[in-house]
Image (cartoon, rainbow, N blue to C red; front, top):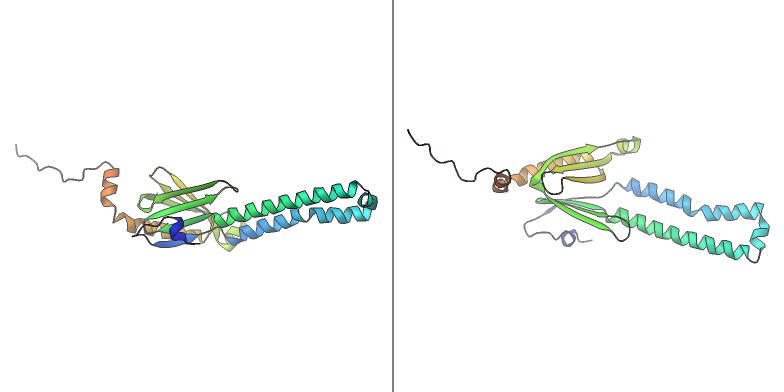
Length: 197
């Protein structure tokens, strides 16, 4: 995937960091999916051992096959949606901005961006045994812009990401001093000279 085209990268902009959710989250979802997808097979062996007459019935057996087939097809749709949600959630940090792309189901996508010089505060939130030992968690980016808070969810090395975003914000502020002055309502011209009385 060409990230530069995806985020409409500006000529002076360089991609610095690309972040995705920790891969353990996908593994956990796939394991849960496998358990749910195996239910019809377990039910088949249960019926074969305890109620074999249902599997020989001229209406019961085709009905079960149809129901199991519909269930498995819906499980594949769930898997596809789950994989897309994981794969298409992406956060990109450049030397100029932070871009958040999040997939919500099959047909909903949210894309937002934040000028990196507007970052005011970055906090991390790591909760639970697996996140603590495998070093992943949430990074919250607070800004003064229209999008007040960005959430980078379940990203690896959240403390390193927090420090990196703050460093990039400090560097980018040097190039936006005039914007910062205008935004805070301060005068861009020097004060008038004092008049002697």
